[in-house]
Amino acid sequence: MEDGSRRVAELDTGFFVRWLTETASAVDREADRLTELDSAIGDADHGSNLRRGFTAVTAALTDKPPPSPGAALGLAGRTLVSKVGGASGPLYGTLLRRTGRELGDAATVSREELARAMSTGVEAVAALGGAAEGDKTMLDALLPAVRALPESFTAARRAAAEGAVGTVPMRARRGRASYLGERSIGHEDPGAASSLLLVAALERSWEAADE
Ligand code: ADP
Ligand code: MG
Image (cartoon, rainbow, N blue to C red; front, side):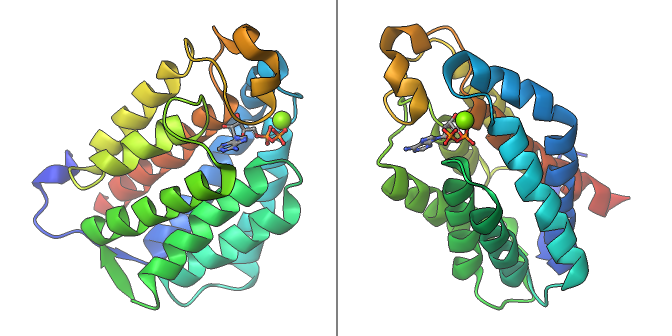
């Protein structure tokens, strides 16, 4: 169902664990495509980087069930930072850790609270990487998604999908792809593609909560 019609959306720890493990499954399924995108404008490791990272996230969540939504995101973020060597590890790690810190130790959060926390997390990614919207990075999917999140999870996923496709005509100004200059034009940014997986998993976890 269209989640915007729901009166209150209380998201508990189980929801966040499901979100992260759903993301891990999606990354595992799509790893070859992510690596293919990265082979066009990077060094062909984005899929394997994220697969290694999110496999470890799933293991960590099983090993040490987190007590709160914020703790789940913090554990996932720390795991990504420690397991992923590429730029995307610290960037996604910062997103999840910063978002988790904003949520504090609340047992449940509303979608609006998650949207505010994630927006702070995405700003931290921008600060860490020195990138802005239009630079052909993960931010081009993440920023529109967090802007749409107060409306619904579905709106956020659609915004992320549009944002990812929107990176195709862009010229990269940050990260490895920027070394290619004009030649980066005409390819989807791998990090924007993986950010869509993260946001799509959010929507699926919400739909699963309905069943
Ligand atoms: P690496 O570039 O070190 O090989 P990955 O291939 O895992 O790391 O990730 C590449 C992705 O990371 C890019 O497609 C882009 O979306 C994102 N990225 C790289 N540098 C930056 C940056 N400075 N700011 C934001 N995102 C970035
Ligand atoms: Mg790479």
